[in-house]
Length: 211
Image (cartoon, rainbow, N blue to C red; front, side):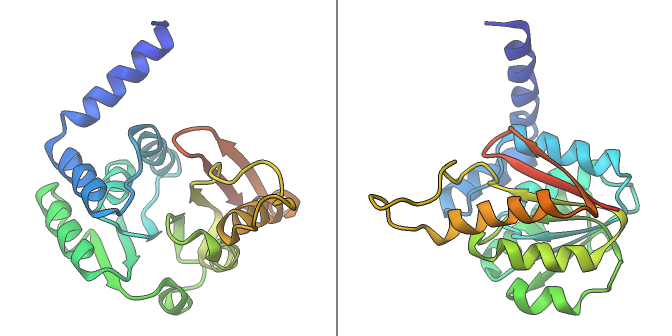
């Protein structure tokens, strides 16, 4: 095993030894909420810390795995606003956030469709926006993130490398989710007001800074 792989394994083991994080991950797997893996979670914590994020929006609470990673990277007084349509998942995540020391003052859970919730949030009020929900809506979420982010704010899309590299051909039926992922990558790449990076961690994170 290479040195780099050994160090990666240590990071993963450290995360698995965190009982709250491990419980969130296991619950997400059992419920089909598709939690972020350790590599992607570590990257999210790093990005939240690097941007000194105070106000974060998350689309896709799940069972709380990505929210825990974000909270551990955010400023101590930072507030996470997380949106999901699944009330049972949010109730579970709320309990884990509290056990992790992030009570009602640090985690604001909003139950509802992101397409209805995001337009009600404050323009330019957030340092970081994480999108980990239905891929078909990624282009819409990008437009909302542009509005929500402060200058130099960061938008991150999970599952950015889940799409096949080639467009759908005659032998393969079009996949709306993959088409949307490719579209949002194109939109970010061609937007001169954004600086983007595709991070090959987990199923891929597309990160873009709004200038």
